[in-house]
Amino acid sequence: MVRMMTIDEYNRRAISALSHAQRLAGARSGNAFARLLSERGNGSPSASTYRRWIAGEAIVPAWALQVAAEVADTTLQALFDAAGGAQPASEEWQARIETAIGRLESEMIEVRQQVGLPWQTVEPETPSDDRDTVQRRSAT
Image (cartoon, rainbow, N blue to C red; front, side, top):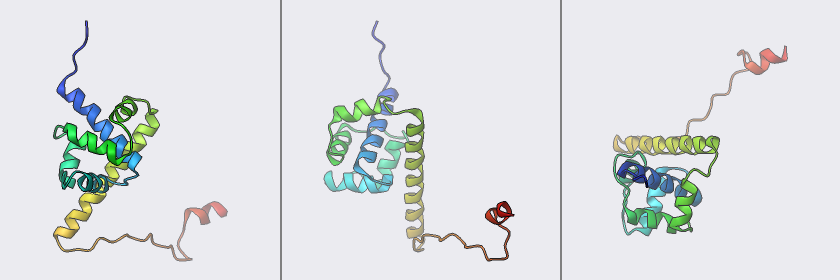
């Protein structure tokens, strides 16, 4: 007997294919990849729509998968084959973390823009010479 897949299972495969296309395209964030898709797809999708797809809050449309394959310069079949679990767990975990960080970064940028604050990269503080540091403690 052939097991039937649910719509949610198909959508999870589509989400994995989109994530793989994003990595292949070299887009650091979902927002950046949404822009690439939008350029290729005549204005769709918006960054918030792409985030809903990746979060599983909306069904990924077939056209988006086709556009993602074009942007990533690959085929739909290659996206689905790679999304079928060919990556080791550690690489998959890292990719999910990078996607989440990119999504959060783009959401932070949007919020800062909405409230009129510039986006700034925070430079790490340099400890003064008299502060106790791990390097100093381990050197003694």
